[in-house]
Length: 339
Image (cartoon, rainbow, N blue to C red):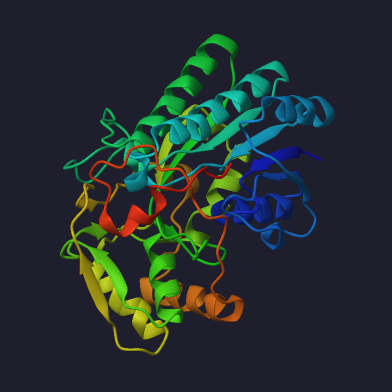
């Protein structure tokens, strides 16, 4: 039986990947610091360990004890817009934490490390985004993800470490942290509706994203270790069709049976239009049946209503307040970030 470490396994994508790894017959150690995840999301059958990828001593002990065959790295603080204002926290969690895993994967000769990157590595105005493009990230989050991609490439050349890199985008679905005010627009909208508040949209709402339902993403990530032709490769992963954020708001409101109420806030510095080509992942993994946006949102809304709004640890410790969006200003004077 293969033994796998899944980081971020109490969080959104990580909990689904852990579930699919179990279905593939893996023995799963589920690592999460609970800064954005919840213990009840760790799938039954996985062994939960509370801790952070920034704790290299903990990782050293886990690798020494378990001798993992595969490592799935999904732990990250994935807030592109906020990353401008939390650089130290961003790079500590998203780069140094990843390096701690890479070091151990090399030392203990893991067969493959699967890394979830992001289309944030591409930057703006380059559509559709294809894997052949040279990344030009515009925010610290994208820079961190691309740095880890480059480090994995170097580790493969120097040590023979196999990897598979996925760049998922705008993923939504059950287990998404709907209490996080800084990221995951679908969850933010749902949380606001359940609290009787208007949905807040930065700018005019005509920015577009290809929203990707979790079941289109997690099974491919989990199964990538069984496809050696995917090793050493980078794949865009997600839905093909982009939608304006305004349309998303209408679909979310419809799923909750309410009229859409939208409050437009000042535009923030972000990529306006983002969608990717998926020809490469289709060649290697086959074509996935797409889940229509309305159906995926309906499923997530049913889960959210059953679970109810809940908040993870409050994010504290914005490092730079200059140009911080007004709606985030309350975080400026708080003391310490999670993790």
